[in-house]
Length: 264
Image (cartoon, rainbow, N blue to C red; front, side, top):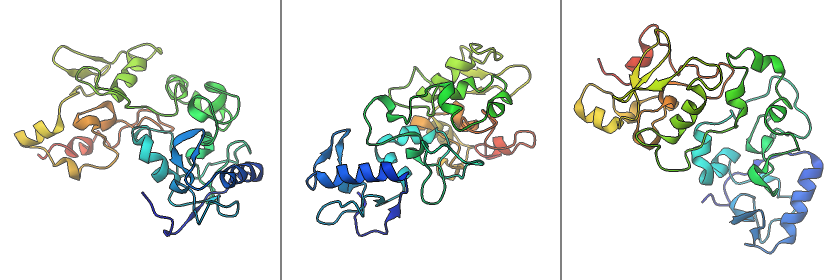
């Protein structure tokens, strides 16, 4: 848990939201649980003295990603980017932080009720189009449908057989359900890509491969190459959330992608 004496990180929302949040926080006794975040006391996130005051409520004890990741680490592994500046002004309903960057609270009202705590009334495609232009999605092979399903992939359960939950969600769309060419797993556990793309085992425990020899230690892999549950995943090689949805984490044509894992 981050202590309140650490350097505060200011979070600047639209003024009415700040005022409402500050009043609600200040009105609760010290240590009381927020009604919409039952297991989180005010001082767990907000700079606190004897009690959280309106003038300090907008200061956080750590970045939002650090705080939200304490409970939602799986969602943050494969998520809409945060910590980046939007390329154009956003509607007032979707605030950036004090640095002008996207944060978790750009899309989520953390003190609100309701599933997902999403801001505003728009959902699905409409929610995405609140900030993105249609041309952003038109440039994607499937019109951005895969991204509009959810702002996060989630690893919130046991593996779906040998493969991780992230990969199961990827295959739910990419197994030719969105007009994309079929991606499938054969009886040997090899992920078969369309046309002449690379086919590769999936669901393999990386530690087993590392022990066999010829592989780099998992600790030395780039941080964007994810191994959910220690297994090879779609997200070991592909980026889920960016303008080029599904882009490789490293170039393939010069072997750079392969050499991240294979010590040849």
